[in-house]
Amino acid sequence: MARQDLQDYTNKMANQISNLGSKFGIIGVYYSASELEPLGTETFPELEVIPSNKISIREAAHLQSAGLVSGGICNCKGECNSNKCHCKKAGGDCSSRCHSGRSCQNK
Image (tube, helix red, strand yellow):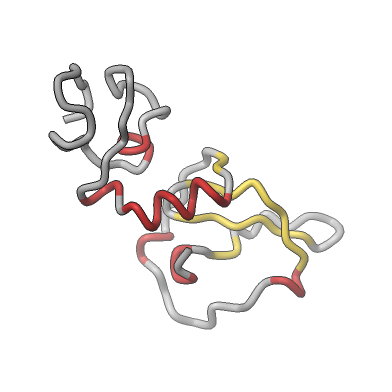
């Protein structure tokens, strides 16, 4: 996962552990301060609004590498009308490559 897609979500706990947020949601793993590297003063506009849904680190890596917002495929079996659809969860539309022949409400 690209480092710029993560930021300290500032959900500090009493024992100094934090979770990270990405442009796809809050990663459901907690890290101690010693495990995190500061990003400095550089700003990342894509991280100004972090969705409140919890995702696994594997799912965050998949969403980042697959580029679902810009042309990936979701392979949904349903109609893509809930956040179970990776394209919809990432804020993008399904493409014709996602699931040919099936109805889709996320176009």
